[in-house]
Length: 217
Length: 184
Image 1: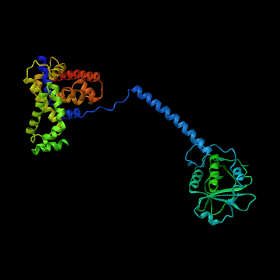
Image 2: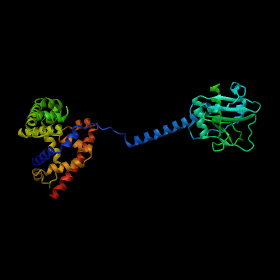
Image 3: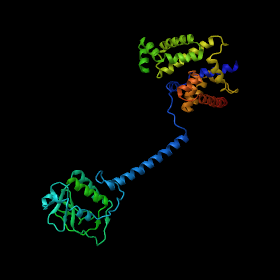
Image 4: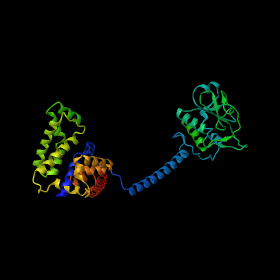
């Protein structure tokens, strides 16, 4: 019985252990069990794979969306949109007939009235085409213009053809053109200015403008 | 009801203290006693004795962990009751003592250490250094006298894991007790 006597003493001693240990064991609940390491790693690998595929798909869809349906979302990405297959000037020339309703003489005050205006002129007309944009389109175009994403520098022989010029005014008197960098000397105030094109707007920008004009029509 | 409110009732000498204690802890206390005595009748008597002792010891005592406080009382009462009965009877307590006997090295003067209160000190330090899960398993087994399968179910682990944990903890305790005995 010697052994049991010693065991009993140990049992008695355990009966006096710290209350904290008793409380801890008293309230102990099953812990959240994690999967074995191998399963965790496999799960991580699957997650990474799925996320990569999803990301690739989303990037692909986003690019396609930008090229097929501009104006649906703000252009905020830094990726360079595809460069135009056709010149911006050609696009505007092609819209000559359908934008006839925008033809109007330009008055200086119009540049200060707070509305965003797309203004362009054909060589053979005295009137300007003046298109007032919605706030949404105005915001998109302002962003695109500021970012100059995809705009490419043109060569010296670049010709606007039948187009005299294209300008954008955000209603504060300042006049911009997508054909020039936004810098001192390239921004007018209270009047439209002549220029030689230095940049060719991107396909995205062309589609943005086209869409905005169609919305305003 | 919160523990401190129940303790306040004891201090106010309100009989509601017993009602609330019974409501909150009777099942746990009965389980501890039954595991040691293997008799529901004896366990029920021990539970009632526990309430009486708690009533008598408070207001002197003001336990922070009322559950632990009551558990210690009923554990001591149950072991005492077991000892007062015939020793030949094999009960839960006997089994637990046999298991713990593995922990004690032959050279260890455990009686002296127990008498001096040093043994509890060593066990407290030992428990404090254990991983939480191992400690809970050990305390559930040797303080609350829970059967192995009950511990496994409670902690959501396998029975074999509980057995392995207990075996390793006992081995570790044996090593610690051996070292402590040398230094005394």
